Image (cartoon, rainbow, N blue to C red; front, side, top):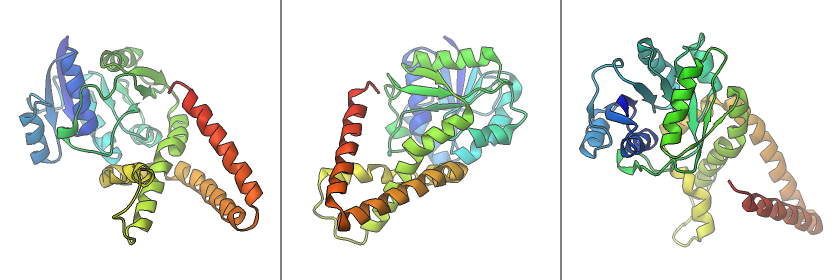
Length: 271
């Protein structure tokens, strides 16, 4: 057990890390900051953090769990102390670019865990168990800081993997950012229709459209180039399906069967 953790941003992901770290004795104390005083007060009341923090310095580690657009500024405020500083943002390369030269004690991170729910009341100590956390250190990153941060994530049950920041953003544009964008757009399309009778397929499809709009505006804007590339490909695919529905049902059946085969192969793997 080391000293105190400073949690900057006391919502679902940061709050879950705080709960998990406390439950496993990773830090002696967790103190918090939040741009919304009411949210910070709720985090203290719920025991997500022990007390408000009055400084970025003097802590064993700093976890930055704010929307992507605010991460670089928080890193600048936190790194002077030399303690490991890490974030939980879903986009990595723009943060690294905004920080150049990248402080050696900053370790960019992205835990592959979360929910469309938000706020400290949703924080769970088991959120990261058996889930991947991607670390994207750069050449300037201190290996000791990387080892320390990897140890924090492993202590809360996560599997740590490393990746280049740009490769990370390319990957998650397809498997996370684009699906969220499509869910938002589809829910907007459907919102003018009567939705009193819908099935589980509809609910499953639009679940992520309930996510935090501030968080997702930042993510989509920060990774716009990669998301647009995949979006263009998706639009072309949808147009081809539209043509097959009208003119070539045999080809449509063949394409759908191939998709089902790919989905079953995906399901059979251990994710």
